[in-house]
Length: 270
Image (tube, helix red, strand yellow):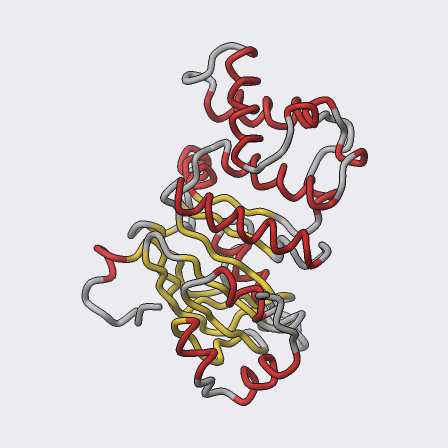
C-alpha cells in the first residue's frame, strides 16, 4: 500500500483515491457519511483486500471506484485520470477498464438469458470489431469458461439452474470478457461454502497473475484476505483504521478494531 503523498504515484499506481467522501441523504440533518475522507493508492499488479464489518463503507467505496456512486467530495484517479464527470464515451472506456463483480450472483445475472446469451451479449457490445460473428463470440465465451474452470455445457443453462459457486464464476467470466485492468470483487465468496470459497480464491489468484490485472477484493473475513491478498485496508465506520502488507497487519495489528477482527474469524487457509 502506498502513501498518496509519495512522489512516484504516477509511475507505480493504477488507482489513487484522494480524500474520498460519500454522504447519503445530503441536505438532511441525519445524513450518513458512508465513506469518510478515505485516501489510498494501489500499485499495478497487486491484490489489495478491503475488509471491515457490514456497513463500514467498503462496498460504497468499491461502487465509487467503479463509477456507480458519485463522490460528495474528493477524487478517484485511474491511471492518473479522474473518474468523476466523464463523458458517455469516457464512461464506456472506463467501465471496460474497471469491472465490478457482485456478491449477489442471482441478482447480477439476467434470469431470462442463458449463460451463452449473457456472455455473447457482453462480447457483442464491447468487442464486436474484434469478434464480428456470433460463432467467434461463442468461441470466446468458451475460452472464458476455461478461464473460470467451467464446462462448455453450462452455456445452455439459465442462472437458476446452476449453483451459487458456478454463478459467481460466470460473473467473473463476464467481467473478464471486456479485458479489464482493475477488477473489483465485492465479497464474491461470502455466500459460498468454505470448500467452494477456497476454489474460487485459488482461481482468482491464478487469473490475476495470468491476465496481468490488479484487484481490489472486498471482504469482511480477514482469513480469506490473508489467503489471497498482497496488502490489506481495514475500514471501520467509513474510515480507514489501518493499512499495510498482509504480513505487517496480521503479524502486528495496530488498531484495536483490527485486533478484534483477527480474533473473531476462523482460519480457513488449511
